[in-house]
Amino acid sequence: MKPIRTRKPLDVGRLGNALARAGIDPRSWVSYGTVATVGDNGEVDYTDPAAVLVTGDGVDVDVYLEPLGIPVTANYVGLQGGKKVSIFSPIKPGDRVLVVLPDGDTLGPPAIVAILHSAYDRLPLGADNLPIFQNDRLLIHSDG
Image 1 (cartoon, rainbow, N blue to C red):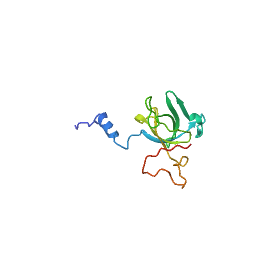
Image 2 (tube, rainbow, N blue to C red):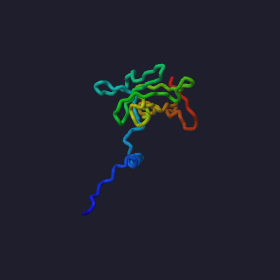
Image 3 (cartoon, helix red, strand yellow):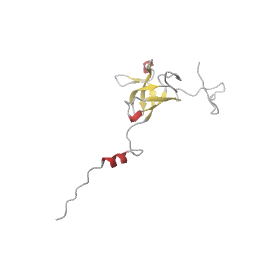
Image 4 (cartoon, rainbow, N blue to C red):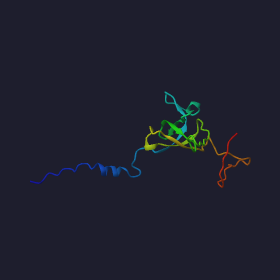
């Protein structure tokens, strides 16, 4: 009589290593988004000033992640946050942003790491109608 072959037990460690390689992780770690609120009816409002809340605890911003289609509230610290030094630029509804998701989880809390240029919010132009940034020096510009 031949011995009966049985499958080996599942090696969870080997499975974890196989799933840890790049391209197989189903979580989202970084996403584009737009500052906006999402109503109870699911409609996205890119003009609602309530999307940005500034308090003594920090700046919370409602962001609609694209292309994930997920609304989140993200922490915005500008370039540097904290009691000793803070460097912020204004953030407004409709701004296109880059959001990082710690641990690949939207409950993270997500954090806005940059406000991006877009068709809505283009580079500032000079009198010659060309961008004032020339990629040869640091530019700090404020409209108004």
